Image (cartoon, rainbow, N blue to C red; front, side, top):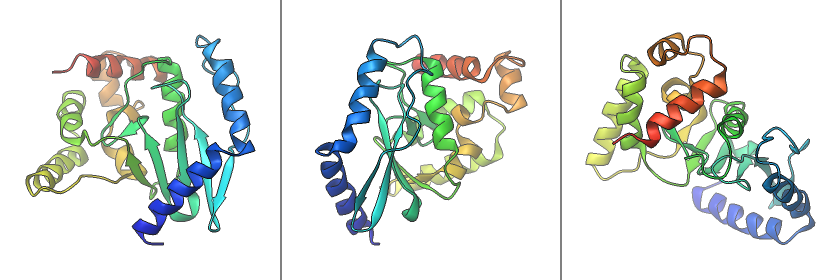
Length: 208
């Protein structure tokens, strides 16, 4: 499927999905969560609602954190995910309506996608995100190589997206919470993953 056809399929399927009965569990989940923000693990969907368009299955993954109703559209057959403001290249979205635990849980869901999954983000913040990431993991060879590559792309007026799940696992500090070097640098050797995520997110929020 060509990129143009894929985009057309996504837009049409999104419209059909939003006007269909498949939206019911999403509305219910959002409504319940608005009254239970302090319980981020409550009321999770047990199955992923799926919309079909032109024979392409589009899974809807519940990814709250940036907002309570945030979702991701995943196309397994095309190894593609539209992640909105949950995951960015070398970064992630601000935690606005949700909690740190909620956002980390959403990122874990995206990390479970196959490494070859192409990731389309809501914004291109790659260069700024790399500058911050290097304060967390300055000796990451994959990150340093990516910084050089992105600098060349942007200098040539080219986009640094889409990214890929596997690439993010190697270069995105928000997905590398088990790395001993990162934990040591943060002074959080034995902390829970959500606590490590929260510390990195707070540092990013105040990064200039």
